[in-house]
Image 1 (cartoon, rainbow over the protein chains, first blue to last red):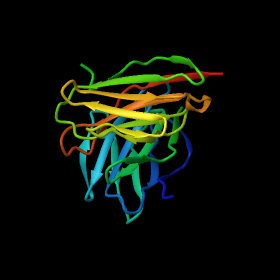
Image 2 (cartoon, chains in turn red, purple):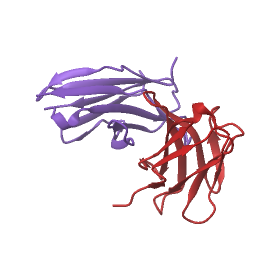
Image 3 (cartoon, rainbow over the protein chains, first blue to last red):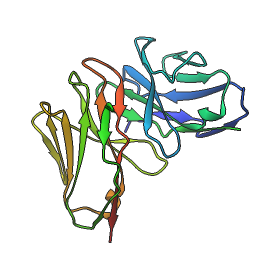
Image 4 (tube, each protein chain N blue to C red):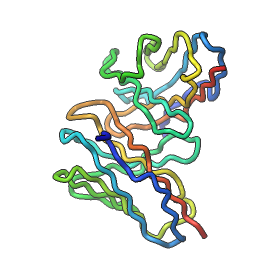
Length: 110
Length: 111
């Protein structure tokens, strides 16, 4: 069964460092998303991506965040200068209608 | 008003019980509705889409009331393995690609 894969599963980084979270969406899906979930809180929308550009983004997705689809398969989320409050589980998802999620990257900023 | 609102629970029920979760959404232009299940520290997994006419998948029944902007999920004959958080998910507005998640309702099924 096709699935969304994310790497790494866990990333620890120092405050102020840049991180890149990687995702391989399901191959025939057209829409891609990043969500985050702070421990114990709800799943929050960050950004959606369609036709090689951002289609929507939330208030959380400020200038320190960027997304890219560098080739035909990968979809990345970059956080330029991480803050302590960026510590969360980051989920990538892809869809044509129903969205399917990757297993997530747990980001810990120390 | 929250975009998608759910009772956080927890709902603590015995095996075999029937349990119902409700969800309300604020955007009348929303067109797509889903129930996801999330186990602790895992990714959300699609449980079922919710169609206007209502739909059933085994022990699970989902219903949509557009007039009241209300979605429900009914689980019959609860199993221990049903213990999880159930997330109501709605798309932002007509043709929006953004899925908005409720905070989830936690279900605990006890032996």
